[in-house]
Structures are given as C-alpha cells and as structure tokens.
Length: 285
Image (cartoon, rainbow, N blue to C red):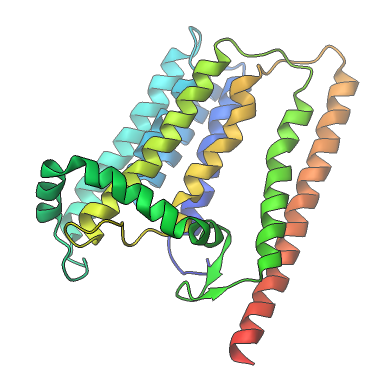
C-alpha cells in the first residue's frame, strides 16, 4: 500500500493460495476440496500475472501430492496456468511498452547470455553480494522512492518477530508424525523458491540491465516477499496433519497458538506505525 503498487494485493493472494492449499488437505468433502483447489490455483495464477517468475509457485500443491489427491493437485495447477495464460494474452500483450533504461536491450542481452552463460550466474551472485543487506531491509520496508530507511532497531525487531512467527507452527506440531518422504517434499519447496528467485534476477537482467553489465539492475527486496511466504509451508511438509485423540488438549494448543500469532501481528503493526511516523518526522520536520 505504501508504494501504491500491486504488491499489497500480490501478498494477499500469495497468502490466500497457501491457505487454500493447506486447508484443502484437511477437508473431507470432495466438493470442498475442488473449490479450495480452484481458489488456490486462481490465487497463484494472479500472483504470477504480477511477475512471470512467480508462475513456479503454481507447483506448490504438487509438494503435497499423494494417491488420494492427484486430481485436486492437477486442478489447482491447471487453474494457475489458465489464469496466467489469459492474463498474458489479454492483459500484457496489448499494452507492451518500452520502459528499459539506456543501454538495456532484451534482444542484445539474450544474445550476450547465449555467448557468455557463466556471466549471468556471476552477475546474480555479484548482485547478492553487493546489495544483499539492502534487499533484506527493502523486504521489511524502505519508504519513499527507496531512499528513506527505517531505524536499525526496527529492522532487528522485525527480523526477530518474523522468526518467532515462523517457529510457532513447529511448537504446535511436535506430537504429529513425520510426513512420508518429508525430505523430498522439503527439497522440492527449496527448488521452487530458488527457481523463483533466479527467475526474477534473470528477467531483470534481460529487460532492465545494460548489455554485458556484471550486476543485475532493478532488483528490489519486495519482489521476494511472495517467495519468502512459501517458507510457511515447511512445517506442514515435514509433519503430517492428523486429528489428535485428545481433542481438548489439541484445542488448547490451537487456542494458545492463535493467541500468540495474533499478539505478534498486533505488535508488528503497532511498531510499524511508530517506525513510519519516526522516519517521516525525521524527513519532514
């Protein structure tokens, strides 16, 4: 919302796609599974419409595939590809514009990559080495035209709070059994995330970077937020969801987890509001 771009909606849709994928696994009714598969697929397809490299997120349901849910996984993936294809044909193709900076040329860059493929990999690593810390800060928040950083304490606080939020599901799933082929599923998640990251760098190297430059221009930390959100799937890929025999004990754990999660959200929002006010007051007063 702060940048008046589509990023707020993209993050909401990424969260919706993840939630539909997980909840679809927990439903017993066939019609509910199909509805959630379609909704999740549509959400991931809309995310991919924002940036084509996000299309690999459509493969997320495959990570949970087994003999019983193959048709739901195929439905979700097909829906994602369908939504993305419609957007490419009806949304992108009619309004293609040339906005690349001076020296950038997609055709010239592709020709350069064909002759020097190793330099593309080197450029990605050079960008991470040069801008790595700044990209992390951007992912949390840099205001204005990326020229108004928050306080260093806010970045540390946000990192700790987000880390605690990520650890929370593990504490609630200690008693559950390990999912079949969990290591393979987690490796698949890592490959999807790496493919999306590499796709973003490659897309900007081709379309936004002067030909032959040894660093990728135009990369911003917020581009990686939907990819980072996929990390929330990790506990559910490792642990098998099942109903506990002790219903009261299970409900108690769920209530405690929800209380902590909501406290983290409120604390994060309040601190973000304070940090934004502080940064704006430094800039204008």
